[in-house]
Image 1 (tube, one colour):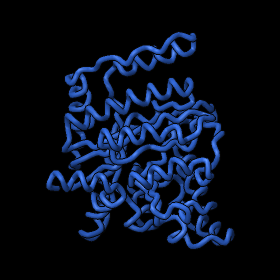
Image 2 (image 1 turned 120 degrees about the horizontal axis):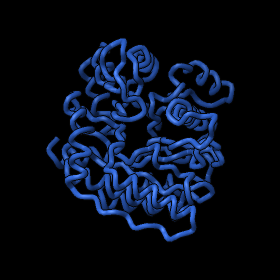
Image 3 (image 1 turned 45 degrees about the vertical axis):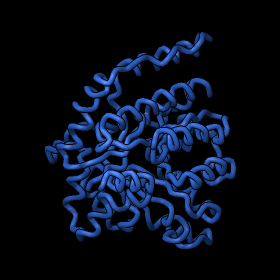
Length: 339
C-alpha cells in the first residue's frame, strides 16, 4: 500500500472561493459574515475525480492524507471569527471528500489560528474534527501572521495547551504555514522553506520533547534546508550542549518526500534515517508543471523514491509503514477496512 501523507484540496469547487471572497469583503466593510454556500456532491466529485483521484491512481498510490488548501488558510486575514468560520467550512468539505472516497482519502484538519489569539482556542476544532469527523491529524501554522513571525517559538509554553490535546487524542501535526503577506517572502518558494527550517531549529534549541515525549510532527518539503545542512545542525546541537539529534529531535520529528528532483531525494535518504521519512507529494500544489529535463511532473515524487536502491522493508516503511506509525488513527482506520 502507498500512502501519500501530504495532500491538499487545491481544486475545491468555485463556490468555496466565492464565499471566501465575500467573507473577506464583509469583514473589511464591517458587515455580517455571509453564510457558507451549499456545494453539491457532484461538484465535489468533479473537482476530485478529474484531479487528485485521477493522479493518485495514475501514479500508483492508494490513499492521500488530505487537508484544506494550505496557502488559503490565510490566518493573517480577518479576525478570529473569520478564521473560525473559514476553517469550519474547509474542514467540513474535507469530511465530505472522505465520505465520498473513503478508500482513497483520510482527513487532516486546518486550525482556526489567528495572530495574537491563544492556540488553546484551536483545541475545540481539533476535537471536533478528530472525535466527530474521524480526522487523523492537523496542520499547525507556526506563523499565523503570514510572514512576520509574531508568534512565540513552537517550544514556548504558550503552545502547550494544544500539545496536551494532541497527545490526548494521539494525533500528529504537520508543520505548515500559509500564504505570505510579507513581500520579502514568496509563499511557496521562500516562506514554506523558511518555516520548515525554522521549526526544526526551534525544536533543536528547546526541550519540548522532554515535556511531551509522545508528540509527533511532520516537517514537509523534505524538512526544508535541514537535510542539506545536517552537519550544521548536528554541530549546533553539540555547541548548545544538546543531546545528539537522533535522541533530541528525531524521535518526534519526521520529513516527507515533497522534494521535486532526484538529487534532492537522494540526499534526503542519504542523510535522514528511513524511519523518519514519510512518502508525500503535495500533488497539484506548489509545483504543478512538467520538468523539461525528465518529461515527468515535478510533483510525481513516487518516481524518485522508486529509483532509490531500497530494501523491500525500507520501501514499505516509507510508502506506508511510517505513516501508519506516525498516524495511529489512520492505522486503526485501515485495519477496520482490512488493509
